[in-house]
Length: 159
Image (tube, rainbow, N blue to C red):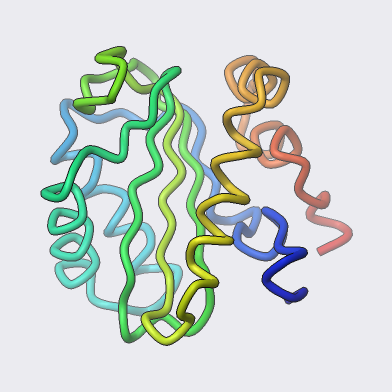
């Protein structure tokens, strides 16, 4: 991984951690699904991840507006920033700051020991996904590979 100052989505997101057309009936079920998927990728406990995400949501919604949510949490068991990108099949209410439904979700799990680096990871993802061209490409993606390519990540053959 590059230095925190040069962090990119490539450092956080793997092709296997991109989901196209995810179905969820609400915010809680979405967080449960994302926690299960992250737990499988990281070989961690899904309930621990979910509890951390719910605790963070209790501080204020991570629905940042423009149809984007960035649920995130810090966990002692996470060794490096981990991302999971999902485009929802149907937008859902996420208590976003602009009160619009969310259709793009980037889950970010961060180590507790990273100090300020978690802010760099969060800023990197937010900057990328809030870019209007990137958001349009994500919404137009036909499959997980297209979603991955839309965030400017390396193609799987180059990873």
